[in-house]
Image 1 (cartoon, one colour):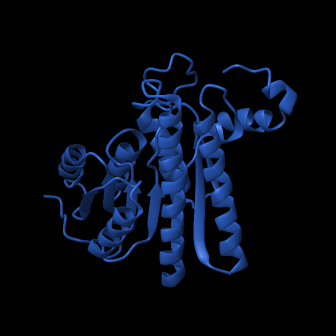
Image 2: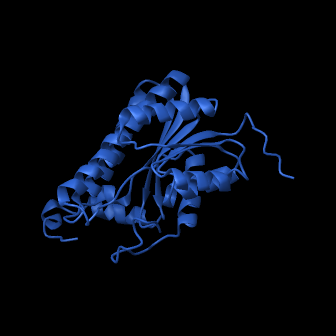
Length: 253
């Protein structure tokens, strides 16, 4: 019989956006490694189902259904889960939204900005202050290869991912300047199988969720500064950085 008694040496992580896609698979794989987890998402039913599944591998799994767009509720969720975990070693800021063609353009952009930018920034601030007070910690942010791109059809999304990557770089500089033992990892996936990508006809080099997350977990545990998933996207990123603005202005994707 597997011993699922609490292990005081298990890494304790919070994962946001844990009810589907990359966040859900991160929870599975980290639980399989014995991590103690606090899972955050809006959909309580999915969190409950996931918690029941992964509790077979980890004795410490706690969930909190919350809309991270509400900063007071988000703060309370972070604090509640960190207390239930008995402390915190890392946080994975994975929650995010993509482009939504169903709603009006501004409503789509506003939602993207609220979650991918403001809620992400709030999570960064909370985690940085928590780990600064504690003396150590690891912040992982889910950006995208889109941080290197621009798009006339998804301008808010690509801009939000550029913000996330640049924001993490700034906080890494702040941690270094203050000689803090805070590691910051910027994950930049290409196309990964998820609810966000499954209906996109323009995807290529699509990685399975399981394989993509395996690469992410390996990079997280190595405390890498940046993780490209899969590695071939690194070369696309470098090429995109060299494209002059007059060419971007002529592109239509």
